[in-house]
Image (cartoon, rainbow, N blue to C red; front, side, top):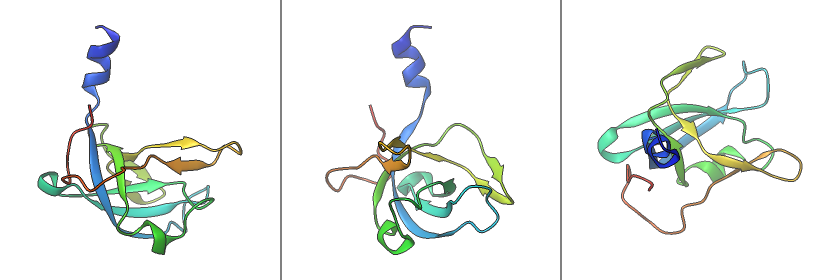
Length: 109
């Protein structure tokens, strides 16, 4: 498999965060997220975003997520997608930004 083929095995999509709440049972500070991926439906994720974001500012934000990695149980919460970000200088997650409104569920390529 070439590196480009490997990249294309990831299904990266744009979703909108509908709701975010603190994930009280997580070992590291995290939020439970509910996201809308348009035709793909709603999915959930657990994400360590508390260093830079509060729940109220996450709702409505467009994000990029890997939607085909399978579900994981994170401290009793099913995380179905991996929301993508990059580390800050302090190693805390900063979300990848979508610059303009695009269709929910749009594939990243």
